Every structure is written in C-alpha cells, then in structure tokens.
Image (cartoon, rainbow, N blue to C red):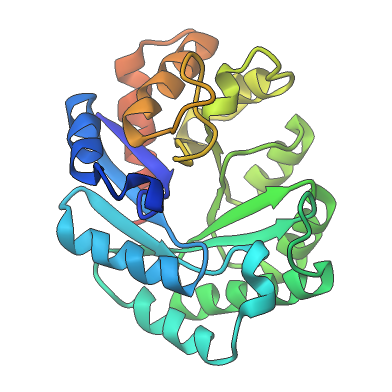
Length: 253
C-alpha cells in the first residue's frame, strides 16, 4: 500500500510504455500516484493523465525554472484547474538557485503569487527547493501563513526540517536516500515524525540505487520505502500504510 507522492509520468520518456509503467507500479503495491505540473503545458498533461488512469491524481503549477514564462492569465487558469476533482495541490512551485534558469527575483515573485493562489483556493502546495533553503524559509514564514503542503525531495538540513515541520509542512523523501553519498538525508528520514513523512520517486529523475543512471518510475517508490523503513527500524508494511495515509490526509484524497 504505497503512494508515489511526486512523479512526472507525463514526461516524453514515458511515451512509449506509459501503460506498462502504470501496470508495474500497481504490481509493486503502488495504489496512487500524484503527477506534478512543472509549467502550464505539463499541468494540463497531468490533468489528462487523471482521466486516463484511476490511480493518478494531479498537481498544477509553475516550477521556478519556468518562472520567466509565467503570464498574468496563468493564475486564473491555475485557480480553475484547482477546482477539478482529481487536482489535489498547487505545485511544484518554489526556488531553484542551482540552475538559475529564471532570474532569482522573478522566481521569488512567481513563488509568492502562487502561494497566494493556493491560499485563496485553500489547497496544499508542493515546494521545490534546490540550493535556496534560506529564501524558501523566509518566504514561507512571511507569505506561507495559513498554508500546508510538502517540501518535496527534501535536501535541507535537519534544522530546516524542524523549522518547516513547526509551520505545519510535511517532508518527502526520494531516491537520494539510497545513494552512498546521501550524507545527512538518512538521518533526516529517520528523524521526521512518521505522521509528517511522505515518499516519492520524482521520476523520471533521481532513480534509487541499484538502478541509478536509468529512468526512474513509480514502481521504484518501493525501493525508497524499503530504505526508509530500514533507517527507521520499522516494518515496510507499517511505513507504507502510514505514509499513504499521510498523502491521503494532506491532499484530501
């Protein structure tokens, strides 16, 4: 009873075998997948996937990479999409200072505007944070009041995790927890309160060991779950049930 809380199966790398990918996920105990929008086009693709597959839900939003392309009318469209039955969150949104594909000031502006959309629509948010920890925390503290959501593929410190947990957010763990150079992430995966923990693949990216370097897919959330269960010294089944319950509670599924 696993739930992949963050996937991108609308990606063209799944075009040739998407049905088989979904079938493998179900065979590996994955009962649900949230497909995440990264721009307006991928958000629309995500919604279409929810119509094709019973187990797929959608999030809609603009990734910081695409902040430079966001138009004023996009916010109304996001609000419209957020009213659809299988659209469960606004995301992924946030900041990315690793690639800086959009100017940082523009990233921050679009992030804040989308947080406001989520607040107006009373929807959770899915937050992307890469090498932008201080500004993510600052914006969430000033602009994120009244919101809940998840920091996906968490890459911050334990201290940052504790800060966002205090604000009511969840922490999601992805494939890097299985890497030999995972550093602080295993400790964080073990320390996050069980009721605030989510699991994800972020496929087709961040494929867990031993498939690192290959295309990731939702079935591999089981590998992430096995590693996290090992770190927390608990049964896989118990972890799977708890994290799936968390997804359903956070996203009202």
